[in-house]
Every structure is written in structure tokens, then in C-alpha cells.
Length: 279
Image (cartoon, rainbow, N blue to C red; front, side, top):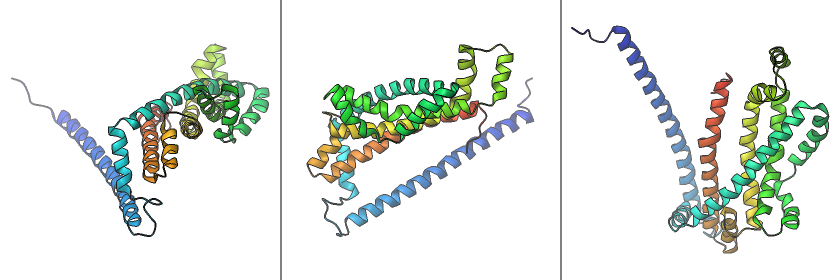
């Protein structure tokens, strides 16, 4: 004869159900706050636009902006522009990631490089990315390479500085312990230095992604045949403010999606791995 479930099993099951219910309640409250916040903004936008204080071509209501988003999505213009922009963005961002981490590793490990390359990187990081476009057009001409170059230059120094800061933040005791255990050369870099610097590196990657977005849109507004920046400029040239705002909404949504689906998860994983609590 088989006994029924034990009291311990029932208790564990009930505890798990309570935790799951608590988690759902928490997410429900967060979602309600987000919906209420943006709902109030949209209602206020619509009411203010329809109040007659400004003509619609200066300050359009939200509804035609939403209609522009839907129409351009259905006819394929937004998907095509997003695909073209993301292709340029990924090429430039991944190249900047490799270059920036390499520079940061050198600056973090070599004192002379920190004094020289570090000061140069700090200065160039403050330079707006669009300032590189005239130079890119002279060097590469009216070509996709010019946009990719602008993205790289807008991102690389941010990632280099974050990587360098992460490396220099490693406690000296860790390195001494690693050397005593026989770590040196590549094993020191890949088994200790880079993993211990990951929280700072991920922060730099996240910041670099936002810089890459800005550099991309700015470059596409000056030169591009297809892309979100090009659509933004077309809306301005046609004096279609609803179209301009629709493109801006899409840029924000794509940026938020990338942050939540990639960088937020990566950040949580790294912080959990290294025991850094997050709220």
C-alpha cells in the first residue's frame, strides 16, 4: 500500500506556489504602474494636441503618429529600415567591442599605456560621434564604410575606458593569489583579469550600445539611402511631423527591446555570477 505525499513534500509545494504567486503579483504591479504612467502621458499628449494651442503640423496628436507607425510597418518600410540600420549597427558595434576591449586591456595592465592612451581615450570620448562624419566621408566617400566608421569611433573609447577601469579595480590580493597558484600570461588574462572585470565591461557595453545608436542615426541622417535615420530626414523634408515622431518612437522601442532582451539579462547574469546584489 502506497503512502500519500508527506507533510514535508506538501509544505515545499505550497512554498513554491506562494513564491510563484508572489512573483506574478510583483510583475503585475510593475506592469500596472508602467501602463498607468505611459497611459497618462499619451492621454495628456492627445488632449494637449487637440486643444488648439498649436496647429497639427507643429504638434500632432498621438493617434496619427500611431497610424504612421502601423502604416509604415504594414507596408514594410519600417522593417526594411530597421534591418538596414541594425546591420550597420552590429558591424560597427562588434568591431568597436573587439578594439575597445583590447585597448582597455592594454591600458589596464600597462601603466605607460594608461597615462598616454588613457588620457587620449578620455578626451576623444567627449567628442560627439557625428564630428567624425566629415573625416569619414573624406576617407571612405559616400559609402556604408563611412557610417560604420562613425559608429566605431563613437563607441570604442567608452568600452576601452570601462574595460580599463574594471581591470584596475581588481584587488591586488587576487592577482597575487593567482600567481602563487601558477597563473601567468594568457591564463592570468583569461582566467582572472577579464572575468573579474566583467561587471565593468558589461556596463561599458551597455553604454556603448546607446552611443552606437546615436552615432548610427546621426550618420544616417546625413548620408544613407535606407535606414531609420534616412526615414527621419525624409519626414523632415516632407514637413511630416507625424512621420518624424513615428520614427522616433520606433527608435526608442528598438533600443528598449535590445536593452531588455540582451543587456539587462547579461547584466543580471554577470552580477549574479560575481555575487553583486541587484534590486
